[in-house]
Length: 166
Ligand SMILES: [Zn+2]
Image (cartoon, rainbow, N blue to C red; front, top):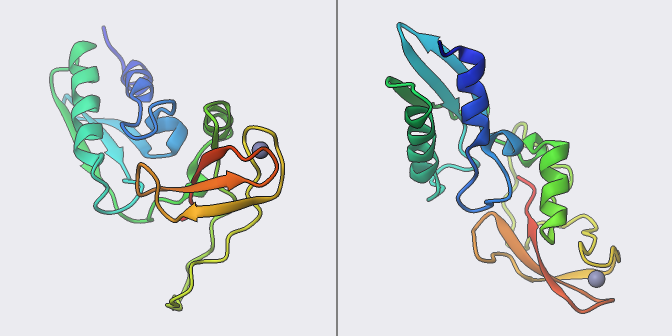
């Protein structure tokens, strides 16, 4: 007999297509696994609206649960409250750093009106994931995926990716 706890455990093993070292649980994308009339209902919140990885996440969840013996699976997307990089777990941050990607700092709070400026957002001090130096610079606001920027360490000169704060 399969239980909801097992279904949750299966859903927690599914990894992010763009950050494959992280599971959807590490990312905070996996919100809830529940059961409704014999159907396993997985609720997810995308990292940002229009994330091209969303369809892949959805398919991967359905396939993983089908393989585990759950025939009826529904993936629901919830956009509110919006995902924040603050939802990445401590475990997720550790895995990012181990993969040479600097984890996000504390996200800015977007309550109320959001000022629009032409200047890039002021970044907090981002440490180099290779040598730990604090002196790093942004080379590009976007790297291989839209959720990461490309930076370089001024001490060891190694380039690295940084998961942006949103
Ligand atoms: Zn460095």
